[in-house]
Length: 280
Image (cartoon, rainbow, N blue to C red; front, side, top):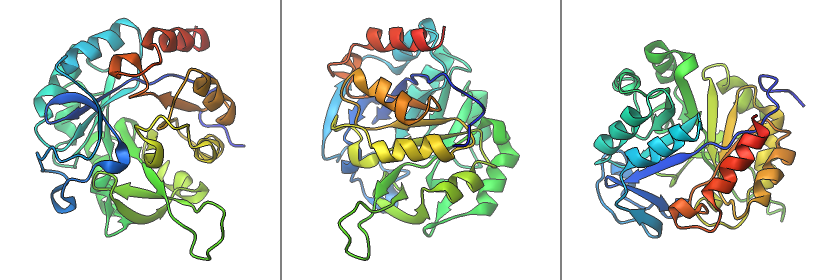
């Protein structure tokens, strides 16, 4: 196995997911707003919401800052979230990454608001393929060291009718549109030259607390040459150790709806304690 950055200590990466200006946790595979308006829609027509709160995003950011957690992310799901995102970044400057509707036109602006990195998906995947010119543009705007590529993916059924699980493909437009980009060693190697990290939501399991996608975690740990964070399906504290083992310590983990601060059963304080034990 290749080592990504010779990193051995796995980290817990916190998150703030924003929808219609509020902190929410949503079942990933059910984000069904109009695909053609995915970047601009303010519709709240999401099929299933796990959690919603009036607690401001900045409060979550301050908690993460006080607990010394770095490399977390703020994701804007649709429009109407910019103010909340800016408030979170202002509360924890340099401590959070930001994603959702990021393009070469606004990437530098988000860095100026205090984001440590910008996270990009849809802008660099067009017509099912990587748009290398746009990727170059983004690197020119903020530098490779501030760019995170979101390779959130879903499994495709095998064409040959075999019963074994099919490969994972990058999905865009609120995780509804399949690209032709398979998440594999070649993709991770090539795209890793353009960014400083990957963020990978296992969309099948996102928000469902039904267990992590173990084969995906193994692949990320084995083939990503840059730091990578996995999210999706965590149901208990044991999944932290599972990801650590499967990813060889090279895959960080985000937990959303399973945390008690987002309405789940896993105690946030226990996860922070686990993280501090791994990262003394």
